Amino acid sequence: MKKIIFSPTVKTLYFLTGLIFVISFSTVSRARADQKIDPVKLSLYPPAKQRTFKALSDQSKECIQCHTGITPGIVSDWQQSWHAKENIGCYECHKSNDKGAPGAFEHNGFIIHVVVSPKDCSACHQSETKEFEESRHAVARQFIAGMPGLEVTRENTLFATMGDKITIRGCQACHGTVVKINKDGTPSPETWPNQGIGRINPDGSFGSCTTCHTRHRFSIEEARKPEVCGNCHIGPDHPQYEIYMESKHGNIYATRGANWDWKAPAGKWNILKTGVAPVCVTCHMDAGLPDMKTTHNLSSNLSWTLQAPLTYHYTDWQAKQEKMQEVCYHCHSTIWTQNYFKQADTTLEVYENRYYKPVFDMKQKLVSEGKWAKTPFSTPVQFKFFEYWHHEGRRARFGAFMQGPDYELWHGFYELELNKIELMQQMEEMEKKK
Ligand code: HEC
Ligand code: HEC
Ligand code: HEC
Ligand code: HEC
Ligand code: HEC
Ligand code: HEC
Ligand code: HEC
Ligand code: HEC
Image (cartoon, rainbow, N blue to C red; front, side):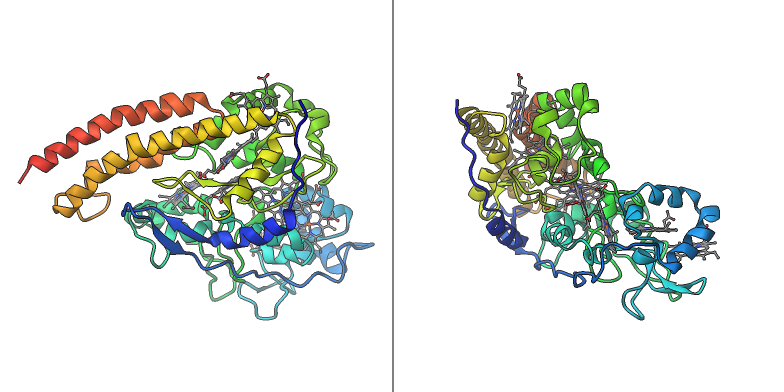
């Protein structure tokens, strides 16, 4: 059957995805409170006058001379990178662009900074940085700390309950810290090292490109593989990596992936020639498909926000869903793809009406009667309710949308069924008490 390929309206989408930062949340109140997030302030340097060089700068030569003995691992990694081929050395990235910039310090006669941020990369990689900053990845830090107006009933409260000493190597390792600078210009131990995806940098920019392209190789091969996403998209509450690996797509990747052309330059990578199964970045970055333009905005193909207690649509969700389906049409028919999305949508209705709403309404009743503890995360039933939507509730929905039947059912809806009974019993007991 003929596959319909929608012509990509990529430009419009970039613009529209900029608007997604007006996001609504469903937290405690059933009526969803619309919570605004400040639009990301783009913090790019103007395009560099020179991106490639005929020879290594004298400054970089000095760094390398000394650092070959001091940090040989860094030097050898850099030597194998594309940057080395184009003579972009240590100094080109680590020099301080702004005089007196936060994080700049004196180092063997040079003024350098160690926290090289997306803003530094932006001088030579404008479009990637801009797209990254427009994605929800860039604001990941702001979610854990809580935002003005965001009701503190979700993970945010857990963050405060557990405290910085624990979360620095936990929540903040994935989401990012607010990097603070000591008086001497070096980063403070309470906030760095950190490579969180939404880290707030001393220069005001967001995120860290090394979450997917680790320093100093800055490889695209590494960034293309699902394992890189599995650094964070894993575990009881967002097992996208495990779900992918158990899907048919993941099975094919595990079986034939070793022979795929991972090293192809961006723009020339064509999974249809060698792969014939999508990886995460095919569906979420449009990468590896010759007629689609890769984007660093990982939010641009999502119609639902499945991680919320109650699922809701993003703004302009139809266009985003069409772009996701456009990916599928490269390998599946229209009827296959559209029926699949209908099946997944149906599970959301069941989640809402059979599982979330009755339990939530009962919980609200206890809240209104003053029988639900006021301090968050202070009684077992509060943890159980949190896990109900945050663990099994998410797994059921993610499993349905990303072809992980074991997660949809046994780690998802089955656990919802059981825990609904247990939660209702517990709450009915609480209700009876005076
Ligand atoms: C004379 C030797 C020498 C030269 C030249 C030199 N470095 Fe270093 N660098 C060091 C030493 C020693 C350390 C500390 C390593 C450690 O703590 O284990 C260091 C650490 C660093 C750090 C980590 C921050 C810190 O203070 O621990 C960065 C980033 C760095 N160097 C970049 C550069 C760059 C960029 C250049 C060239 C512009 C350069 N270095 C030139 C010796 C040198
Ligand atoms: C393409 C840009 C780029 C180039 C080129 C580059 N660096 Fe880096 N460097 C980074 C980034 C990004 C980080 C991670 C900083 C952070 O934590 O945000 C980093 C971190 C470091 C660190 C601290 C990391 C650690 O594990 O202790 C040192 C030291 C360092 N670089 C030295 C060098 C040296 C020496 C060279 C040249 C051989 C070099 N860098 C070339 C971007 C670059
Ligand atoms: C001075 C300019 C310059 C800076 C600063 C710079 N790059 Fe690059 N980068 C290049 C050039 C030139 C290439 C070669 C490909 C090209 O022309 O785009 C490249 C290639 C790359 C690639 C593709 C590598 C591959 O294997 O295909 C990645 C990924 C990358 N850079 C990431 C970064 C990141 C992340 C930073 C900031 C930490 C950064 N770059 C800073 C100039 C720069
Ligand atoms: C260092 C941790 C980290 C890595 C690595 C990472 N992510 Fe994420 N990702 C996050 C966090 C944290 C969020 C939640 C951000 C938020 O909602 O603000 C997220 C959100 C997302 C979203 C949802 C965006 C939205 O608009 O709701 C997608 C899709 C996504 N990531 C895909 C990927 C893919 C694909 C990879 C690998 C190529 C990847 N991520 C690598 C931490 C990471
Ligand atoms: C292993 C990495 C990791 C750790 C540790 C982690 N998170 Fe997350 N978090 C993620 C990812 C990935 C997502 C995106 C889930 C999705 O969109 O499906 C996420 C989503 C979130 C969201 C929802 C963001 C939104 O867009 O609404 C919040 C809030 C959050 N995490 C807070 C926390 C807090 C607080 C902690 C610590 C108590 C924590 N996280 C620990 C990776 C992590
Ligand atoms: C979520 C993972 C992820 C993050 C975070 C990320 N990248 Fe990438 N990047 C990729 C993937 C995957 C590719 C390969 C895309 C393709 O094959 O079309 C890529 C490709 C690139 C390329 C090569 C593009 C080309 O046309 O040659 C550059 C340059 C780059 N990234 C820079 C950056 C910069 C700068 C940042 C930080 C602002 C960043 N990346 C953050 C996943 C990521
Ligand atoms: C075959 C395509 C496909 C592949 C491969 C894929 N995903 Fe997805 N992903 C989807 C679809 C479809 C959705 C739901 C889209 C929507 O909201 O309409 C989704 C949703 C997500 C979300 C958002 C969940 C939320 O809270 O709304 C994250 C995060 C995510 N995927 C991460 C990943 C990661 C990480 C990988 C690889 C380990 C991956 N995906 C592989 C298709 C894919
Ligand atoms: C690059 C090619 C390719 C792309 C893109 C792709 N798939 Fe697949 N998909 C396959 C192959 C190959 C199979 C295995 C078919 C079989 O079982 O014989 C498969 C299997 C499936 C299955 C059957 C397994 C199951 O769990 O029921 C579903 C459903 C599916 N894909 C949905 C999607 C959706 C939805 C998208 C887009 C978001 C998508 N695929 C994108 C190649 C692709």
